Image (cartoon, rainbow, N blue to C red; front, top):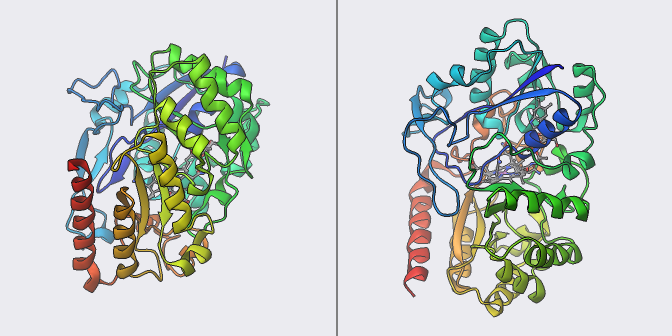
Length: 435
Ligand code: B12
């Protein structure tokens, strides 16, 4: 039986938090490999409860929490940013100990945010030293969006893009079904996590929208739903494992209203009524009907997050065509009717997108607050291959510049204003808690 080692690398960034962060696709690949008869070893450097970690690790009740950190040298491109740069996850001293001693036939390394590639390189460098001559295959979001950079710089023997996963079968010399539909329908492999405080779920892949700032179309298929039977089986198994916190990664969770209604009703009837659901990736307000809002309340969606991005009418049309202010208002009134109180739901607004200005963001902040929503400002980052990143020079050559802390679209003169908008949002959110 061939032995495969799967490694999920560290985060290198100014800030990071385990906000229900699991390598969903990688865990699906693990299941598929096991089914195909491979002996799979798995090391997740972002598993905060890795058995080798002796430090005390706290979880919040929703399963999220802080990573262990090690301060590292700031890359030169960030030398003007007065913040500490860190490696998040399993301390490096434990990494080698976490690796299996056996002869390994193949190593698979995953990657997520493009600008975290230094963690990927660190993992590959160490793995190459420990398992000399063993082929290293790199895949994931960074490998797909920054393919040339990964081929030239990562040190991996093979780099495989999301849309060319069939190549993995060729490299491994074994026919496996890595189609998007099989990845979606396969059960997530959660065996490697000990008493996990949460899991991540998807009931769909892809997105029907085409937002100017989003790379989804470059990474995934057209919109597809998980087969109902496997969706229900998966959540039942995870529940039986003792998991009660579930975070959805879907790009468009509510898009098919019949499906989501069926799914939530089936959870109440057939799975359990003591679960919590989270939507870190924003929901589409226009699909949040009265019925769906009621079901969300019934199964316990905690702090549902809706995406608005901008209040500027022209930009709504130009950027995404996925939501209007009126649709947001309607969705929030549905949430309220279902029993959500002010401050029990949030709204994403984008900060720093090209062509936007701080006045619009301020308007958005006031609008969201007037609807009783918590304001969640997401900092724009240019993603290679997307329309909105077209005018950002140098981001392909240096993916670190794609970091959302880099704030490329605001002039230095506006930084004071940005800070004050952020502070205002914090104050307004706090005032909702007191009411
Ligand atoms: C869920 C999600 C989140 C979650 C969790 C993120 C995570 N786990 O990394 C949350 C909400 C926290 C989040 C936050 C952000 N996100 Co986000 N997120 C997503 C989303 C919608 C889905 C991720 C996912 O489930 N992918 C689906 C599965 C199919 O992909 P996968 O797990 O990578 O696995 C596949 C392949 O990669 C492959 N694979 C994986 N590993 C390996 C290994 C090998 C060897 C091989 C061969 C293959 C392989 O297998 C699978 C095949 O289908 C994606 C969009 C998308 N559709 O991908 C954006 C996306 C990843 N996010 C993005 C962005 C911009 C952000 C934010 C910066 C937004 C912001 N401004 O605040 C923040 C950053 C947060 C941070 N600093 O931590 C960008 C990427 C940015 C980048 N430069 O890399 C994306 C692509 C969306 C976009 N706007 O274009 N996000």
